[in-house]
Image (tube, rainbow, N blue to C red; front, side, top):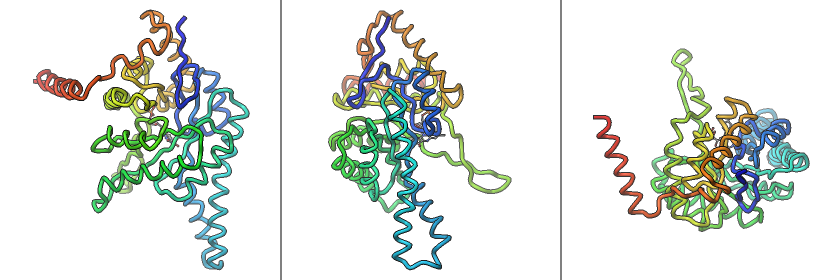
Length: 328
Ligand SMILES: Cc1cc2nc3c(=O)[nH]c(=O)nc-3n(C[C@H](O)[C@H](O)[C@H](O)COP(=O)(O)O)c2cc1C
């Protein structure tokens, strides 16, 4: 029978399937379910910078007129810590109750506070930290360079304070994804999580208000993840890749491993089918390996990654030409 074990961020995993950061990983009950279903690790829901600033703002609305600025500053401070405390409890309890690795997640846009929170994440016993740096270019005055420098700066500040492995979860809105990955890896990241799926907007044309667009991914979002996984895996030997977005089937898991991903993170597919669906995906993956005669993940992992820049550019161009010809 095939051995599905692998490693990611220096952690030994029994297979490549991880439950990704989301509402699904916010309760111990769900985390236990994921472990029972066979997930090899869990990424806890993120502690969001917005959670903490909202908490502080709420307090501001109530107390602003009454308080001395210094006292307000103090409340701001304790408000932040209160919100974060709940999160740290989740890490601690998850570590006590699960035997699979627990990866904590911070989702930030500014460099303030995060170092302190990362240190507490480490103290609570998290096996690794996933840093979801949610910066998007929205202001024409800010150059791409400035934005990219902030990614690196946030990472470096956190890296300098903790010693557990750190992965960085990025979006796909960069002019050069390979260069951004290079800079993050060069700064000392243990892995890259590709890709974060940003909040999607929509408009309610009855109420004339903004609303949330599709919350869950579809399989149609998978091809770019496959492309970039293959490109990044071929260029960075030391960069471990955890693939996320649009992976809804065991077949897509196989494809992304073939392209060079080390692990596969699952989210929308489990919202749709329930956490126990992981068991089915694992069985099918194992069966496929047995049929192909692969006894270990490393027998096939990365075997379809692109092996040079030139080849990649030629391949991309060929695919483009093919798609035009086929649609004529
Ligand atoms: C309801 C929901 C909540 C999420 N919350 C987080 C979060 O707290 N932190 C994070 O890094 N990603 C979060 N994500 C993103 C997922 O971890 C995942 O990267 C994304 O949904 C793409 O994977 P998928 O196609 O399997 O859904 C969330 C996704 C969903 C659908």
